[in-house]
Image (cartoon, rainbow, N blue to C red; front, side, top):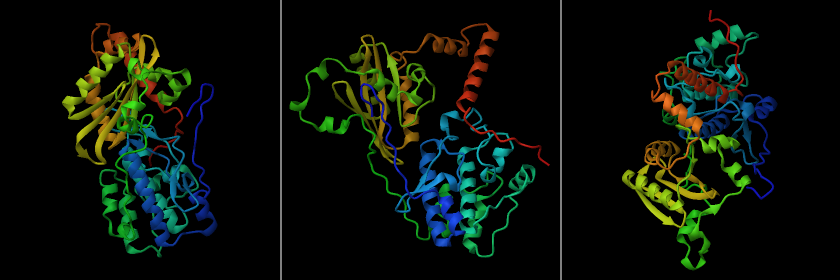
Length: 399
């Protein structure tokens, strides 16, 4: 939310404290209670992964409880997005808390964010039921060796079902480690499990865009038909990705989450027409009202039909910002849609001269190999800077 002079951030107050505090005060939890928290943890992590987010620092200290015992994942400071995955399909920044880190993260050869998060969930389940860590040594070299070998022993009070599941999660080979869909089918896990309920439409619309489409014509303001809504500086900052205006006005390949935006120097009516032309061949029904549009897919995906709201804003007389926001459906499906959809909008997307020059070099439009190499090095450097907040683990030589 923002006014003309202030930006407001509203966050939830979680008054139940950390899950870690519960373990510290009471010791190990009963199996049914630990399983209940593990149900919530897996649901939450699965939700994050479905939206291309990898936490990379899951531990009881980062799991909060509200007054009703509902678990909340916190502290996404080390998290990564799917667009940070390199060409080999892996993440490469070793980060996290040593006792909870997966062995492949320590080996510094790349790792899958989904699989490494699952390992951390297994360590958490062990801690909840045992009251202590499965891997805990006085020095890092000994600790890492135990993690690499998955050298741990389940206490005698663990049930056979719990032992079996934990051993499948704490598999040192990420390729054979159990996946979340497989965890959901595990007999021990399924006891007392209630699948989460997702609403068909998410509350992430643009100015209640559904209400606008359903409203009667007599309530419409005539000025809305004349030109797009003007956007002030605070609105512009609040809508930009990571509060960076560079991200707003520069085309970022693959940088799409639940919402995205681009700038255009074309007239607003031309922008609307181009969006419609690009969406219809992809199987989307288009509903227009002034400078707002709603695109709705005709096929049902993982989370129902993909629905996208768009709006054109005037930043300056000759510059417009186009905002696209997923209002229904799955985020990864939105990512795939936008990748194809954006290719049909190349003629209207505005990019800075620097980005255009970089694209020219990448396409091989110049014979200057040295400049090409420098550009690639800069891109690699930018990738490292995106993860500069990560806490790097000092990795001893494997023995």
